[in-house]
Length: 169
Image (cartoon, rainbow, N blue to C red; front, side, top):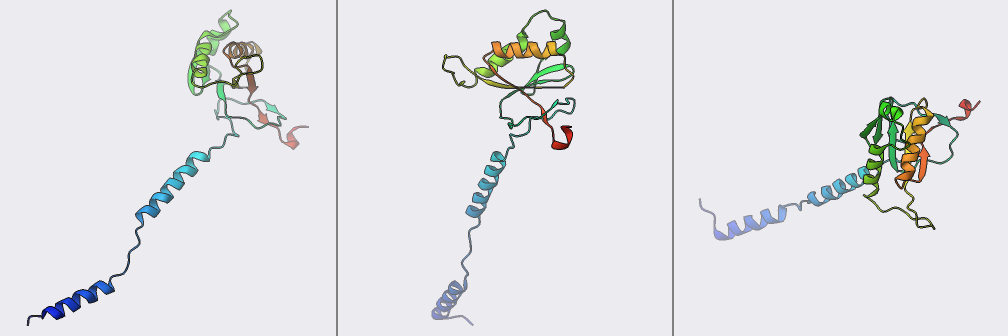
């Protein structure tokens, strides 16, 4: 039997009133996704120097925590600036120069990427951290430090492992 127009209208109204309001979760998920990415990006820990298992840092009673600076890493075979090999150690030790040209070129390239703070004499003072094994020769360390200072990196820090209280005796 065919329904009357009134019955059809009542069925439609009844179905409309029974429909539950849905929650739109898309915008809520977008907010949480942005929050997760924000926390991942900003949770970097700058208190640990980059790790390299081939380097055993010297131990010290350093009080200051490391800052995030340009890192010159000295391994047994290579000199690496921010993860990029720039020179071989044996070539540097066999050279008679006080500076290392390839390292200087890389440091100047890195210096051009950002502005440096200027001291009261108008000299740019950039910061660099030298991270080398405790067994590297002083001659090599001296040449690296000389190259850094001639490349506008006058604030040189040496990466060390902090001694604990029981290791100091």
